Length: 49
Image (cartoon, rainbow, N blue to C red):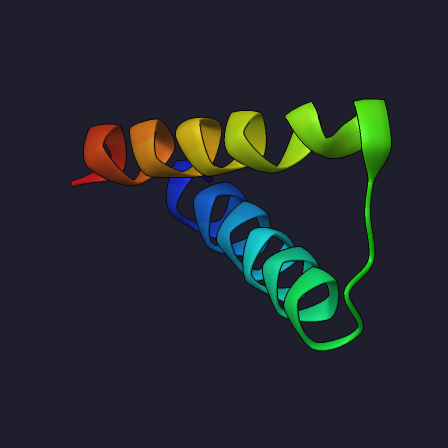
């Protein structure tokens, strides 16, 4: 379960980073979501192994 969740979060993170980079999207105050999402995905991946 943790491995699937971490992969989904990682995929969402990568899509967000890609979209913000390619289209120069500024998330404003919602930009805090991206690093939090990266931390959660990384921690879940580490705990899943």
